[in-house]
Length: 113
Length: 115
Image (cartoon, rainbow over all chains, first blue to last red):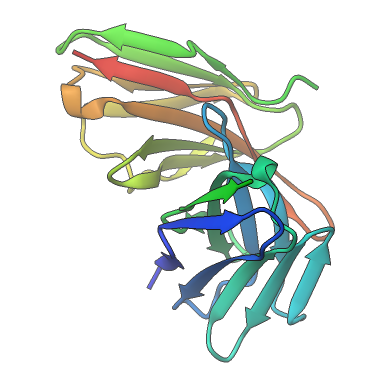
């Protein structure tokens, strides 16, 4: 019940295209859904996050879409750039308690010129 | 702030040796996490501390692994004895709550190779 399932495992997108990464969760106690971005040789870094009181959150070219009834959320990267090439992790946690975060398995994104 | 500091950045050791990884969280953060990342298993939570107290160590693979947090500014992850299958990148992260975000800040990681 603690799992967060992420797909696809890898993704190749042309520059200027839209990158879409999907995640699904089971635990209805989760109420915080962050996305982390990791470049090679670096630790993951928070990119954007959403709470289930809204269905969408946008920050620049990055948008999270959230479907509470389906227990699914996705990351959209508009106008994808080569500099966006990284591994993306979705995650989920319950803000009550001790902030344990459950991470998805990661999506390796490659944006080709 | 310098961010989360981990040392060493790289460690190469021989099977059977003791390995100690170190972490200094960001000042003021009261939660600390140790993760292990491999190609096969992805990012795995090993243990997390809240206010220096271990809260959940269910991810620690076996008794060869131990972690301590003697004070708010320092934590160690020890592997004794080390085995080749322990080879991975180990990350430490600390957390702060804001009005909206619960952001974990990750350190640069320690790449461990056990020969």
